[in-house]
Length: 467
Image (cartoon, rainbow, N blue to C red; front, side):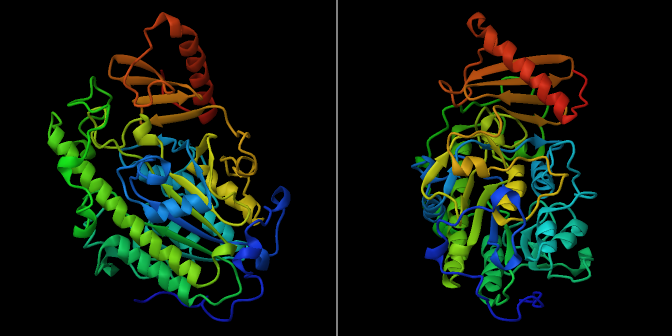
């Protein structure tokens, strides 16, 4: 398959040390620049529509994710990573813009224009940058980020067996007519390209490899082997299953919500969960192939590996199917880091956003982060599990929903038509967000404190919603 090879020349220099010798390597002190030859490689594995609780390593005994479980065992998994929400139904566009710019929800343009981008910054710092898979923020921003690539999908979703992909264009044009149809399942297609890059790369320069999957986004069509792992009739319903959402949240008829009948039926939800899990297990298998190729090259110990999701998904929870809400199932995502200096087999409970990855990896690699980045480096948290970089997390969806949570309570405010609603959940006692405590006089203090904190967040974020 055609791909750019201009960076494949030369031999791997002395900067690629043995894995054992780098396992405990320190982070760059104070974010100071580090010579390119001593910087770690970066492999970023990004899934699409994968909810935080879909890894066996994080407590889901129903799902089979052996490769991601091994990644978590060799690295650090965050248990409270979030996205900041979205300004439209395609949440992944907003999240990916935030990840690439390191900026917050209303300050990260969907086309990423006007701000330095994460791979672009690393490329200017001496990295070879290579991208494959989904890119939902336009060809111009992709061209700024990557000096090489292959099987690039400029879009949001597609039949996984017929993904329209582009070969790398050094001119960065990518006209629609130049796309071709991928010849195999999307997760295999993108993994093949990543593996080819890893095996053929011989340069002494460090590399930044971006592998963005379209799984487990619908159409959920897991290959037979993976589908067979999850008989629909054996799938338990989520505890917060409901035939319908109890009130209008502002987005009950968006495309995602029309994937199953109204009212929701137990059989339909079980089938969708089975297909969702099948897609994730197949994705896990393909990620395992990429990680195995990295090991084969001898560079695993000198590489920061990141696995993250771009947003969650309801799949029957609260009567919803999509990600267009600020419930935990839609805004909480998986996040694992492995690599030099990252503690092995540990968990971090500190609140994190995926947009924090940009400054975090900059600090880990000794690459100065641009002043435009609003995310916070998670390096202090990785070094010390007691550290925190924020005490609450905020999320928003369009002009309809706003939320904030602390370590125990969560507030959601709805702004739909003339109706205004408030929900308050005790996540310690009610992680499924089933019992609204907003009218409980005994929780008036918690409600008032979170409402004040929400006002602070909205002002800080530049929220223009008049409410």
